[in-house]
Length: 100
Ligand code: FES
View 1 (cartoon, rainbow, N blue to C red):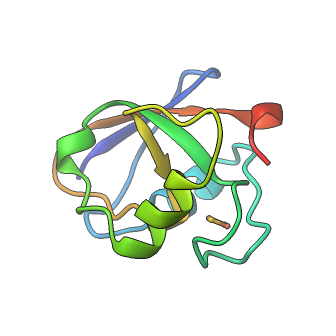
View 2 (tube, rainbow, N blue to C red; view 1 turned 30 degrees about the vertical axis):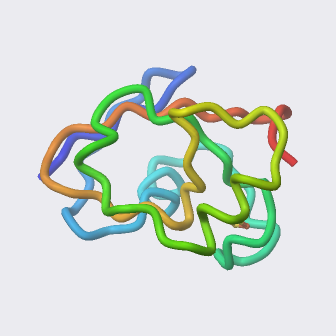
View 3 (cartoon, protein in one colour; view 1 turned 30 degrees about the horizontal axis):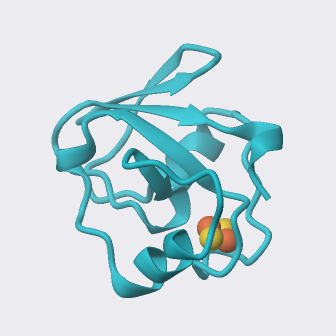
């Protein structure tokens, strides 16, 4: 099972392979919003993947199109509601107030 490290708190949890990143973040009791209810239509679950990016399932078109329309996006950006965890450890940075 991959270890998920959540920044800036530094909390670590074991997450099941195949689970959705945002669900693992919520299970860790870390703050993240789901304003569009996991539909890749808002910006509230925008996170930076600091490590383990290649372990996540590939980005789909809805996520890619949403990220293209957002400001403050970097190469490490993902929408946590669209990320499926793989086998490798992942470090994610919550953007909190920076997210829409
Ligand atoms: S909850 Fe809206 S894009 Fe993820």
